[in-house]
Length: 177
Image (cartoon, rainbow, N blue to C red; front, side):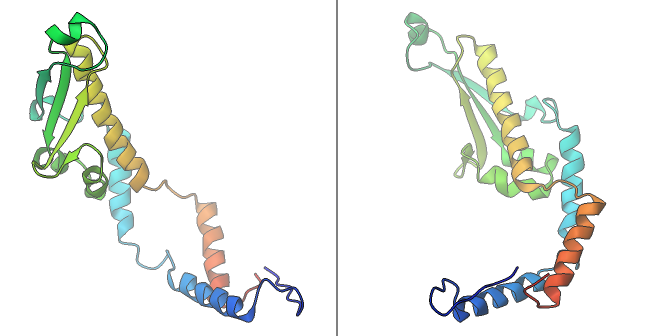
């Protein structure tokens, strides 16, 4: 990075340079190659997500109830209990999910804090069985989404070397690398 500072039209002042230097020092102090204890959790979660499928979460730990759906649909909506509601207590789900995903699952839109359950509803189909499958699909997408948001991908050795050189450059406290 090269800075050209003119006295007349300068959008970058010495105050900005001082801030840039300070942020460079703080970046150099956060070296990812020093004691990364979180990498073990990441590796466990990566392996678990590779084997995760529709049948990983046991259906017997879920409570499924049915109620009347709302919206258009004519007499079927008024007469048939086709809306499916899946309740899954977190005390039964979290032991089978890696610890690193717990925060994202609790932050999801399906988490009911009072009952400490995931409550997932589906009423898009006319058949109960299809709505139950839609609930389990939403549960699967929730867990996979938590994994994508939390678990980082594996870094190639070439990329690790590039980042290591960058941190060494930042560690020398120079603005030009």
